[in-house]
Length: 326
Image 1: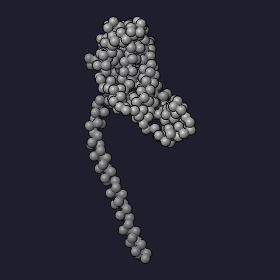
Image 2: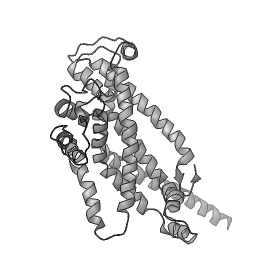
Image 3: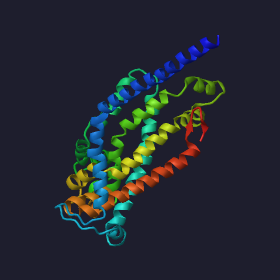
Image 4: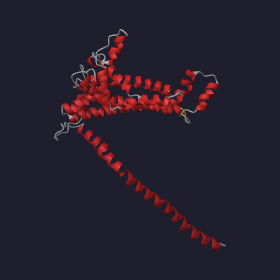
């Protein structure tokens, strides 16, 4: 029996090692095959994301003007942004204004529309399609349409206000109403956010809603104590995306203020000059690529800080099912 055990052990050991090697070989081959399949993405990520980011970070410490001539100036660009640029404060205030009101009003409108479109009524698919259609238009086309709608003399909006005896404002030609006009344009494209909210609403377990009904909870109580807590991760996601988009908003503002409203981009009287528009002006109008790169990295740092704060605050109001209140 001893001999047979030894023989069995001798035979078993090589078999186990061989099985482990056999298990490892397919995984390495799978890794190589997987890397081959995603190599185009890796090459694109390096070529169009990592290298441009590293290059712009380098240029932010130079006086590069776009002609291949650059000298290392250290942190002079960053110091100049806060001490010598007269437009920085205006651009920062305008950006915060548009981001704040755009996020608040856009998120609230999208949530209300999603609640309405979540009803089980006849033809609901048609309504959902109609609310999503505006998002299919390119941003430039939407901006062109709104430049006509917001025209103070011939625009549809002021004519509608005139039916109620209200004299419409100058919108894009007014320093007071130019920013609200851009916020209104942002509300036009809430369809994507509505779709995400709608998916979140339909993912809420119906047995929880029915249990609330059985306990006597009305519509408002169910919305406040059931729907919104279960939807809080979706709300957090949409608000975070809206904040990031709000700081990067450029195309619609550039088109509206340079073609539909003020005589120059950011007008009238710099009332719509945002951080993104100022970066464009410095980079492609004033040929200060290095200075514009420094402004871009400051905007990135600002958005990053806000994102980190948002994640920190989310622990107080975002509820993840299965993990309890965070």
